Image 1: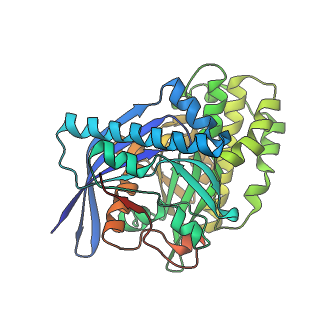
Image 2: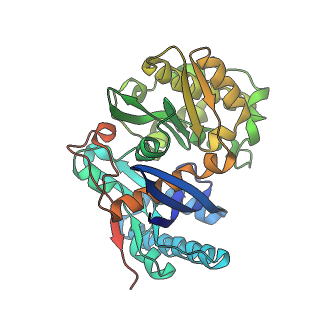
Length: 358
């Protein structure tokens, strides 16, 4: 039995930092298994966070320069982690940081050059997992459902609450998944106005009350009316959501409280619509699972049909890095790692680009 030793790298739309997860992944009796051995979270300093946030507006040449710079930075973080923990690594699998995602135009771009990661770290690197699917007519997102299907199929639904919320589930023998809409991105945007990176455990949000006008505007966003497969990201957030938040004159507590009600309403709507039995289980991961107020509120929206399952903290925080580690292995083994039933592409694919160190 071969054990794949992979370092997964993930930087999400919430812009909190880089997650590194060193995983052992193996196949036993045709079932994929995993163990997360070592992890590290590297917070972005203000300069890096600002550069990533603003890279959407960079001219093409400056964007490509930053793509290389950020790739070198990722490679350095991986190199230091591997050396300090004395890890035996087969490959690095990096998601990169999404700056442009317009699949309807055939465009998706993840910052963080794979060649620079490989050259700096000195390890074979797999990255750029979305481009092939978009080239095949797909959304290029979400990608985590392959991990849900292979690692977490005992749960009826898998919900990730990162910057964006996305869900996956089985429907008529196929894995279905899509971006529901907002999650931590709107919450962090609100707290950053008062100098906080995030609302710890939802303590501020729990003190607020609903701003009915803001809630109505958020719930009326046209994205929510689109059928799946669908995906969204930072560009949509800046264009459609930020103006609503910025135009709402209210306390930080009330803005957060309202945003969480909106997130929970939209998630519950999708889960209830797709629940096929009297009682279902919903695995929740991503930073939002650590927001106690949001979890309590979401459970109240879902009762009695659905029960939340909150896993151990290491899986909450590093599930996406784990999934990209799996996707890297599947790419190396030339097995399917992106599902057409999820993205709407013309075919399943083994996606990702492999870079060898110079």
